[in-house]
Length: 126
Image 1 (tube, rainbow, N blue to C red):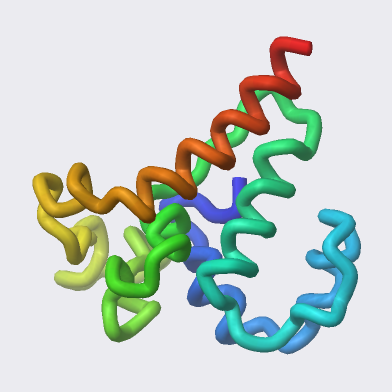
Image 2: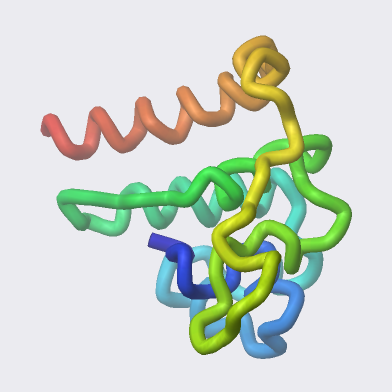
């Protein structure tokens, strides 16, 4: 899993982490793409994670939204669910930016999800 409820989202981690090369190398993606986290790079990252060989791969909704920049909050820190050791109104109050109905009609986003899941399905059933 790229992130969980008690850690930064993949997007927030990417914006704060200065050494992304190890992560990219571990996924076999090389290090030429360690700049901006574009939807195309996010698709490559999420595809690599889905094909890492684990029986389960859990990806928080916020990390899937990387596939379409229109779905992202303006501030990556607003996508985090919980900050352990703190008490405040921002904890456990995440609300996704798009309405569910709009998300269900977002064909480019759905297509990217299907492409990633199709590769995973082939790999896990082979």
